[in-house]
Length: 116
Image (tube, rainbow, N blue to C red):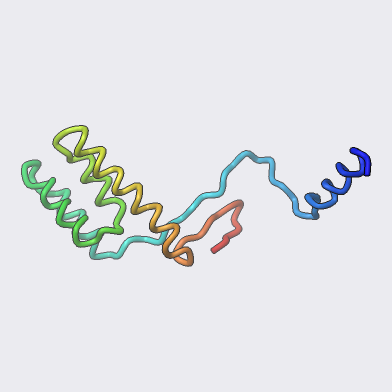
């Protein structure tokens, strides 16, 4: 088979009837809302005085380790850059866990269509 025959056979394998959006927008990943008690406890922790806030937020993160906002606020309340990096990194990996461990609990949104 010559080169043009190989190319046309390849194009036949990859071509299909699916449309491709050229909008340049990536689909949005939407995680489920955190448990209401976690949000309430974090709000209470953030209302604490600055000297107690970090400890209160740490308690929320310990009680709800999958609650990403708690890790983000804990990183913001860190005492130094290394501690902040550690909290942000834990939050990042908890976010990856949320996507990979329980895929039915998130959806990807593109142009009003949802995939779960």
